[in-house]
Each structure stands twice: as C-alpha cells, then as structure tokens.
Length: 168
Image (cartoon, rainbow, N blue to C red; front, side, top):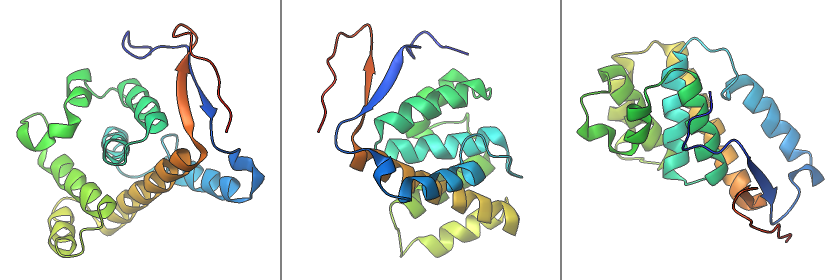
C-alpha cells in the first residue's frame, strides 16, 4: 500500500559510514529477523507496529519513521491513528492494552528507572509474560536500529526532490 504522503521513490543514503564494515550490522539484522516488522510474534501485529513507530518518534529516526509509518499502514493501522500516535494520551482511539504498551515503550526507551516498575505492573494487567518479553524485545530492537541508523547517517532522499548524494 503506497499512501499519497509517503513517496514511493524514497531511498536512503549513508552519509557517515557503511554499516557493513563491522559484523555488528549482521547481528542487528538477526535481531530484526526475530523482532522487527516482518517477525512473527504472539503480540498483535498492529500493536507491535505502533510500538515500533513510537520508538521512531522518540529517538527520532528518519529511516525508521518512514519505514514504520508505511508498515503500520500496510498492517491495517488506521491512518488517523498513525497520524496522532505522538499524542496517544489525548486520544480515545487507543485501547487500554495499546496505551499500556505505549507507556511501556516510552519508559523503556527513555530509561525511566523510577517509573518503570509501575509501568511494568500496568502492562502485566493486559499481557502475559511472553507478550511482555516480546514487547521489550521489540522496543530494544527498535532502539538499537534507531541508533545504528543515526550513527551511519541513514538519510532519506527522493528522486523528485533533486537532492544530491553526499558521502561522509
């Protein structure tokens, strides 16, 4: 599904370094296979995608914002829900389990030591241990990828924008 506001001609260039110069990128790809947007998990696909996209908002990562916006829409998340995910606390469109997962996502991404135990307790009201472990893995995987993409300088460009490639 290509939404009109997500150009289909977007590509990414690495402006800082090639991530394949060390084995780390391969390890990250293994994590993505297990917990990334194509992984088969016990948690709901749409919920997992909302969590991935929220991490991309918080970090913020252009590559991840574009990829996970597109993926959320492809997985059937309502465009309106995607559009106001950043203000989920001020919405009636998110279920209680989604709100608990988004709160957990933010606490883990922002490293909220003081609030994390209560956030975990609230999450446990909606999810079993395996689902919580999967949500944690999704958030941790996304945090790894957003930092890797920042470090390598994954920069979006569109052939229609006329921007020139820069190497670093």
